[in-house]
Length: 198
Image (cartoon, rainbow, N blue to C red; front, side):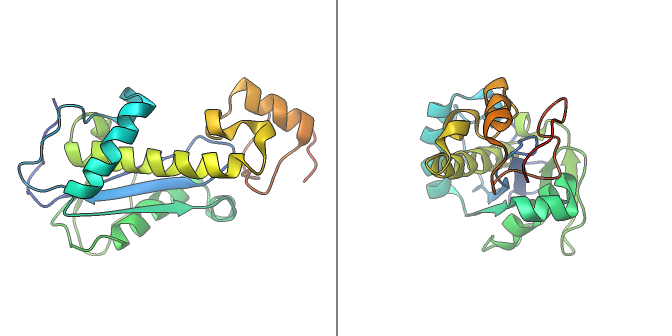
């Protein structure tokens, strides 16, 4: 059972998706849900089917007091590293909110102060608080849609299915075709780190 809030009704939840991927952006969502919001399906995005996530996305967008989603792309990930890029994505998603929250609830254990707003890092927070779960669903669905779009450009990697994660199929395609402009060059693309055409 997800909690509605930690301390205040107008808390923002934030979470990211795609941190462990070999290709594509890291994407963050931020959202403030109204007091009294309830949805029996809402849960950590990783615990929900793709169909349930897609069902929830328009509900969250319609019901939220404010929400925002931000991608941080491969060149920035390679430049500042994935942890900093994940936090940057969350900060930029918070920038997009039309209302200032009293508190920011962050999934995980790493964050940097945002403006002068206090924050709480909550390990597995997307399975504990509604706003973090909602942010995780926005981040995941927007990122999945982006990966399906770039899949059309490079279908041999099957990003529509693997979303850029290091599946066996994705790594086999990297071995065969090399890497694309969407791959993160600072990431270890293959377990044995074969020579790649950069």
